[in-house]
Length: 52
Image (cartoon, rainbow, N blue to C red; front, side, top):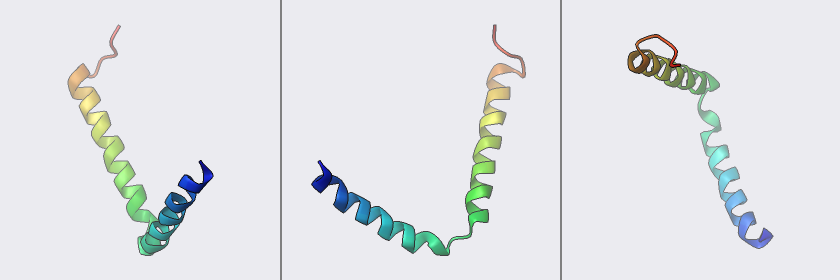
């Protein structure tokens, strides 16, 4: 099992090293947009009221 996970872990580390140049602000901004979108969808689908 370990022999199967090691190549995948090495690939993940390589990808992480390549994306290190992206600012963390982009990740935070993307997360904020996703959460705001989910909130809007929740309010539209539920018409702003909690379901009972």
